Image (tube, rainbow, N blue to C red; front, top):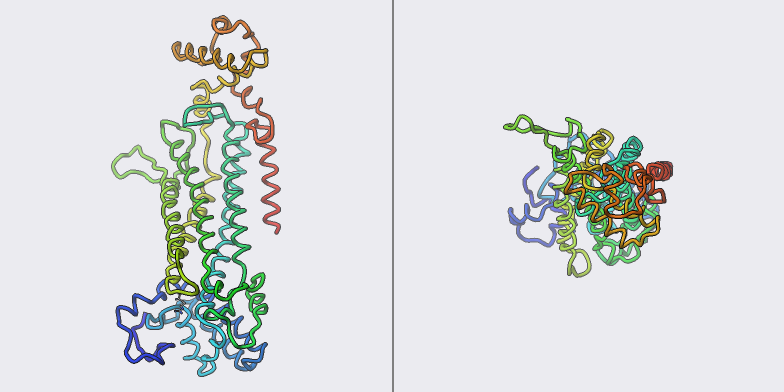
Length: 468
Ligand code: ARG
C-alpha cells in the first residue's frame, strides 16, 4: 500500500491543507473494499458504454476507457496493482490508475455518476454473485441430506421433545426435517435476490444527473432487472444487505441446531453417529478424544453472523437521507458474513454424506425410555377406551415398567391385565418400534414409506431448481 501524496486526491480542489495522516487511514476503505474491484470495473464499463450511447463520450473515448479498465482488471487479478490508502477506496484507486494509464480521457469516466451510486451498484453486484454461490452450496448440503435420508429411511431412533425420549422416529425423517429448514432458507435467499437485483446506477450523488443518461441500458448491461426508482433511496438503501444478513442468521441458526445434535449424538453418551475422522480433531492430552470440531465451530459462528445482522441494522438506524459515510461500515460485516456462510455450507456439504448412523445404538436407545407408550394409549382408544383413561392406564404401566426395569414390549400379557383387561395378545404388534413408526403413515409422518415419498418430492424440487 503506497503512502499519501495529496496531489493524488481526486477531490483535492477545494482543500488548502493535506489530510491528516491518521484521518487518511481512518477514513480509507481500500484495505477491505478492494475485493469489489471486479464489480467496480464492470459497473464502470457499463457506465462508459452508456455515456457513449447517449453521446456524452465519443466511441474512441469510450473504447480507450473500456480497454484501460480491462487491463487494470487483468493486473489486479494477478496481483500486479499498487493500492494506495491516499486514494481512499477501490473506486478512486481504479479511476486514478485509469487516468495514469490512458491520460485525460480517464478523467471523463466519472461524468454523470458519483461514488455514491457507484458503491451502491458494486455492493449489489457483489451480493448477487455471493447469493448465487450460496444458493448452490445450500443445494449441495440438501443433496447430501437426501442421500443420507434415503440410506436411513428405515433406521429407527428415539424422537425427542424436551430432549426426553418421546416417540420412535426414523432417522430419515429426522434428516428430512433439516432438509425442510434449508428449503425455507433457500426460498428466503431467492426472495432477497429478487429485491436486490435493481440498478442504483444513475442516482449519482443523490439527486440524479443533468446528463441524458439511460438507466435502463446500464441496468441491463449489468444483468439487473431494471433501474431503482428513487435516487435518494438508491444511494442510501442497504436493505438488501440487511435482508441477506437476516437470511444468513436464520440459516446459521438452523445449522447450529443441526450442529448441536451432531455434537450430542457423536458423544459416547448418545453414540448415535460417527463423524468421519477428517472432520474431527484429537486432544493433545487425552488420547481417547475425537472432537466434533466442525459442527462445534459452525454452531459458534452463528453468533458471529447474527452479530453482523445487528451491526447492519444498527448502522442504518436513524440515518438521514441520503448517503452518509457511515455506509462505508456496511462492508466488513457483510463480507465476513458472506465468507462465513460459504465456509459453513462448504463444511456441511462435505461432511453430511459421510455421517454414519450407528443403527444398533439408535435402536437400543429407542427401546429404552418407553417410546411406544403413546402407541399403547392409541391401541386402547381403538379398543373403545377414552383417551384420557387410556393415558392413565399407560402411565401406570410405565411406572410399573420403570420399577421392574423392563420396557412395555417385554411385559407378559398378565402384567398388562393389572392395569386393563382390554389389553389382548395383539398389543405386542403395536409395541414394536416398527409398528409404531409404520402407523404414522400420512403426509409429514415418520413412516419409512412417507420418508421415501418426501425424498422423492424433494429430489424433484432440487432438480427443477438446478434446471433453472
Ligand atoms: N468508500 C465509500 C463507501 O464505501 C464510497 C462512497 C463514498 N462517497 C462519498 N461521498 N464519500 O461508502
